[in-house]
Image (tube, rainbow, N blue to C red):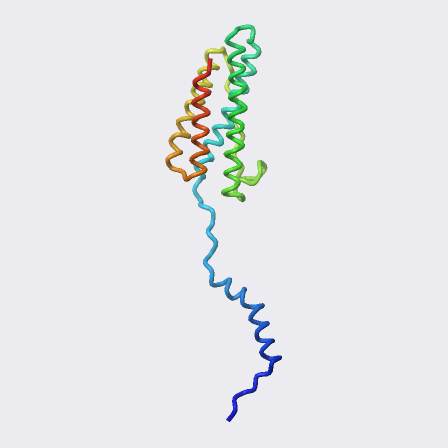
Amino acid sequence: MPGPRHSRRRMLGAGAALLVAGPTVLAGCTGPTPAAPEEPDPLEQPARRAESDSVLAQAVAQAATEIANQVDGQALATVATALAADRMAHAITLRTELRRVRPTTVSSSIAPSAPPPPEPPPAIADLASARAALLQAVHSAQDEASQLVVTLPGYRAALLASVAACCASHAAVLP
């Protein structure tokens, strides 16, 4: 007894159905997409520190400029201005890396998961305390970045090594 006869039209229809349904069926065979890790990103704290250091350095530069009649005041204002710019560049670069790795958690400054704004700088009483505050800030940032370098892979480690080196350079030239 001959088997059921398959027409060309019937075979083409079945092939078209497989083409349409195939990707949907196969999609169920793939594993779930990995979710972003739940723990905080190790670059979050250095980014916050860079932002607050920039605010502090700007305040010191402004205070030192007001006391610029002293030679030390002008030198400190110059170094603090450069430090503020460098620390803001660090903050921007670290925030960019945070957004690259986790675009949904650090999407914008108005998102609920955005970091809090940096604390206002302390009042600058005199040039010696201002210099000490800057020196303590850059040493802390350097230490933090140096400790994280060994825990991070490739680009992120190099990024923090650059931050640590920059902070060390600023600490060396603070008048």
